[in-house]
Image (cartoon, rainbow, N blue to C red; front, side):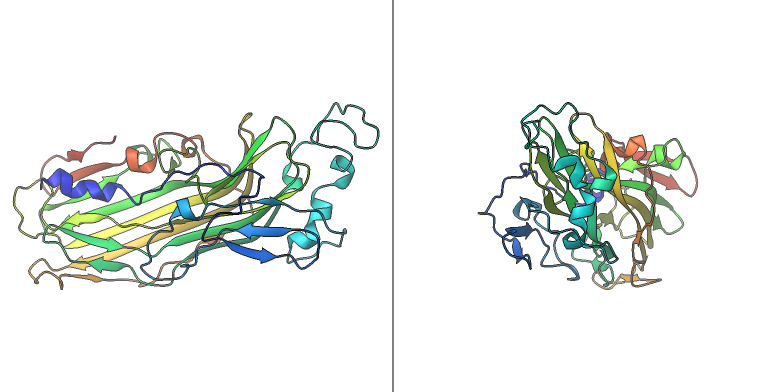
Length: 371
């Protein structure tokens, strides 16, 4: 195995399988979904996706293809006063401004007079309800794996985010997507080999300050982080409010060579691994045609790894965690941050990063260039 192939697996954080979109038609045949009943009668059922494994240390990433988010239409309840904690049972009436859309139907005519309505209701931030927003990092330490004589692997705990959203009726000829967008805003990833030097995964544009953030999309579903549990698509016309749940998870599971990556030797020389990476994750509603974006929630989070290595010890007992064993919990902001342009399109962080070798003496060397 060459040094380049040994390091290549560090590039990818996880595989995201693609899935078809979900619109306002109920799909009752999916497995792995949790169904909860509303407390008031004659309002149908709400199907929401869930990760049964939340909080399980070292659990595998959720199979997004099996846990696609699902939505269904619900009838608005009797108006009630708004008071925290906000809940869709109390918020639907005020949120959808009945005076704007009660008399409108998907055909673009007034339901009372049958006359054409020139101005269809617009979807605006104040018409969208966001509830039960959660963001957390599993409370377990990073797991170190020393199973290979070629590479050390480590698996960080999962960052998880979830939110419920109630969208107003979608007019004819409009399609809205609700989901998570994520971008990397800072990355330090150094693997030290004693006094010889260090390898470093870097994002050049971010490192040099040319951009504020780089997309962390799956590389297919731009600008979205993924396209299964991470997004829900609503295709108009829909005549009633639609309730949906979107969720995502992320972690690191890279490989680091025991030996110097530019060397032909397999002699273990690795002495330290340091990683410090920051992200912004946005909950967004976006018009697929006009590209109008409404930021609904902003989350900031950070993942840090600090591993000390004694290359003279036998395989299986070389590496140990140092520093804090648990991650700082994410911050759900009470204000919304704008999304930088580079967070919305190519390249994503996996394709933009480059592996450098920075010797203690001599010029830096590119080991793996960006894609």
